[in-house]
Length: 82
Image 1: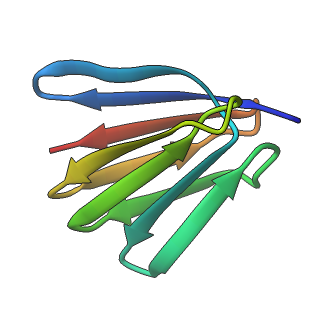
Image 2 (image 1 turned 60 degrees about the vertical axis):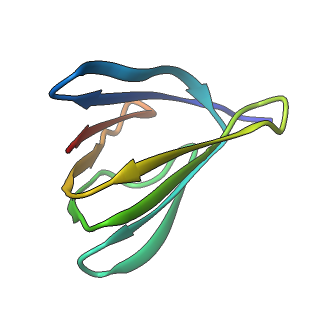
């Protein structure tokens, strides 16, 4: 299984920093799922839940009010959230 690195940063500090298999969240363009090797992207996140799936199948959820997601060409993603 191919994994990617995700950083979730809020005003409270680092909320998550680790390897994931997928990320599902709502954006202003609709709901998206980000997988490893996703094309580069910058998008606005809207209120809802972000669901992270880890390599072992465990899921972790974050409640988000707003924020931004950047997916880089280097198989890394960063979420700046409220």
